[in-house]
Length: 234
Length: 291
Image (cartoon, rainbow over all chains, first blue to last red):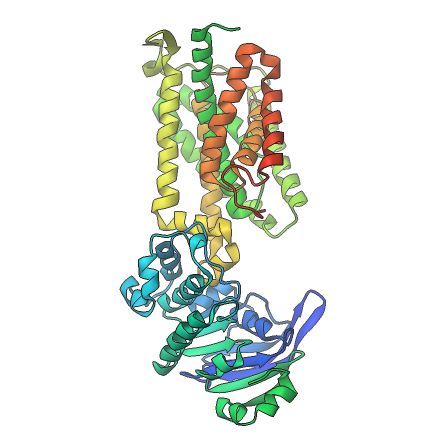
């Protein structure tokens, strides 16, 4: 049994149909990348898993138990954690308060020290308000909020978007470290090279359908696959 | 031109009115910021609080005891309103929320009128607040000074709840981004219930404390509600510090203008609001793009 199974879900934004009978699976300890053009349905897939957008039909299962239809707060308490594209840092709360609120409902919450060992920069800025953080620091904090909850599966939505190359390199190192420790993740990313550097398996999405499924190695070895199916360069 | 002692006296009146407005508006703005509901029953709840003090005083003969029991009553009322009515309106359009809270306000005011009649009731000043206090060049009613001190203490208490407790953390985060609070595993429904009840207690308590200073009538809250709407616009919607600072500013403007010409006091308040909306639409402590 897979840790997470997305089974033929159909998700709509109002009247516009975004995901069509979409199915993906994620095994424990695996990092899966969702690749595809803008509007392919990558973010919608993550939002459906998190329960932010309930699928109209189909089922999402965690450990074989259905979670689709539950509120995001209930899904989060089962160990699923979205790190949203817009980062959604609470600007009026300090770094430490952002971490505290994330840890509130987590049964196995990490200590601040353990978080700061992963992101030393956040320790330096722990008393700063969220709105004063740089883009890179906000992204660190956003990932740190998922880590402090000890989430079983982390959904990273465009974690490297709009960040300077040096910061992207640091974040990729952190993500690769988490992958090595066996943290299960799904990553949605335009920066395909960065995503493939720590993802083990790939789903290619186009117009709300899965059009490619394979290992990262396959995709790296056949860059024309990515070009043909996804319109993205490797 | 009024005399200096008269102006100073009006400045103190402004402080008393301002602190009261701060307390009333805090409840209003926290409910608005967290629940997204603009509570038009707030003025009626102010009057209900004043009548609660009036009734409890008959039974207990102690102002403090009356206030304690009155707060319990307001808390229960807040819980009931949220559970039975308000919670069904969270996802609804603002028009629906305004209509339902406005309706609750009318029902509450008319219930009060049905029980107590439309005539003004008098709540006596508590025994420990009788008389006047000598403040150098000014003699000022003791109870009003105590009122300022009591409300300042309450606002500090509210500050500590908001900034030093987990519930306050959730409320502050919920005002910014309720969706993300849910994604972090927190069910906001329980917080909403508590926030609404605390807001109702805050406004009811303001009514109780103000009761000895004014004539207690079923409609006494109407003017207060209008002014507290101005206050939360001044301070920034959903901002607790904004409600406190905005309340004090509004209180002083109304009081000091009345020293010159009382018929202009409300006009000045709205003129200031209009000016601020032009210069700083998000209010003094508001962040851009909220609500």
